[in-house]
Image (cartoon, rainbow, N blue to C red; front, side, top):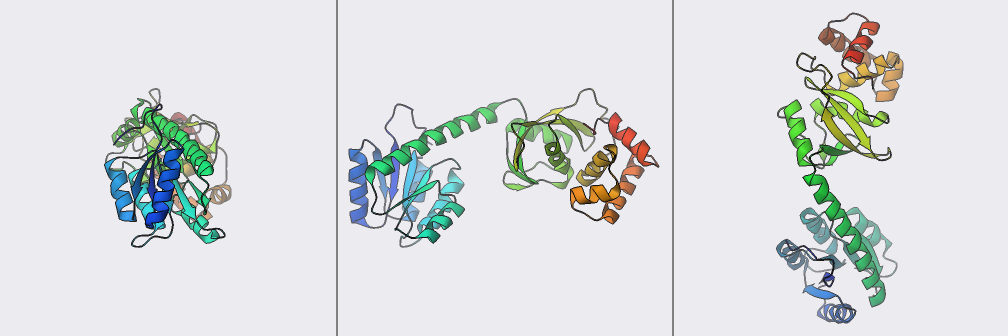
Length: 296
């Protein structure tokens, strides 16, 4: 796909099924110095983006065939960063809300003000270019990085894919999908400032949150060279979670509240942990967690 140059004219794909509106918008945006491509349907717009990515899309909501909402969803699958600005009538609040739900970046109301549209498109295009450049740098980095939202994977770079596949073969996570059970121990890295050690399969991994903690967290990963791994027990994500809180001195009831499960379930996980670690008491389990560096 074509990459926009910083010094090139901003290229906008204008999508509207009314020829007069399409002609008017094309003339006004072109007069303002933008390079304009036109599409008279959602299908045409999707094909245009797939062929050569523009810098931004100005998209009408109401169109024959597939409407602006479906068009936006399908374009978003092709490009996660592409700015998509809806045009909608005054007072159509439900269209604005629905637009953001399907991935719109912004909206403008009709009748459209050319200076406002140009300003919005240019601002969003600059942000998108920066986001794309950042994503490319992260993808190319040799530092394994993965972004999580709750127990869902937002994205990961190639280095993270390779590291996780090495730790737990066959359990590599996919972007925009739930974290596989064997890797759920990574979620716990969000409980502290880090770096925090988790057991993935038989490998001890150090996970360090990047940036401020929040609903979404980016973790940098590395195999902990100084921690035992070859003969480490294989704990599930939940078992690692329970063992972590046992090592931190929490009771079963405390752990149940923290992890959102019943004390009975915590006890069952703890039985499995004791068996895998070859211990009989909480004190011995906590000591084993410290040996594996799972307690921070």
